[in-house]
Length: 144
Image (cartoon, rainbow, N blue to C red; front, side, top):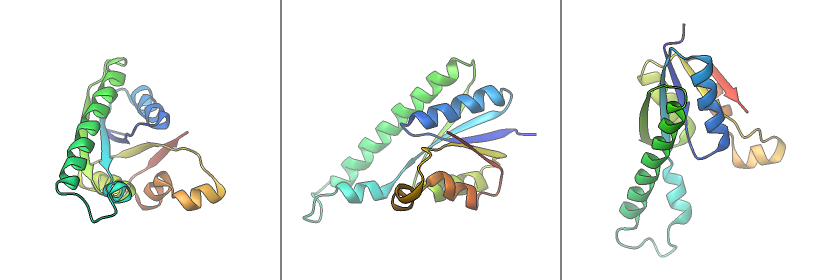
């Protein structure tokens, strides 16, 4: 029986589809929506001169605010299904953070959206869903 489902959630349509799938397929389960703030993204957008004073703090505050707004939108989706969500924000690499959260929080299943990239684009860009599937301790459902 699936009591707790983890749904990694970002701004993608695939994440929305995964959340809707979790809410319709497992209406009695506790659904945890997780957003991961990826510090690597800050590195790609950092100024080349080593960073301006306060850059990292400002970047993190913006990311944290964006994550809270995103999770509020996830709850709006859940409201359409008369469901309450547990929401969490963590900092780290997405695939690793998703699996660590699942390991540490009694998650029975992970339900994750996938962009469905194949070939060279998947190799170059990586696949969070694939990495989660390979390392998860629990069943993982990938929704396209």
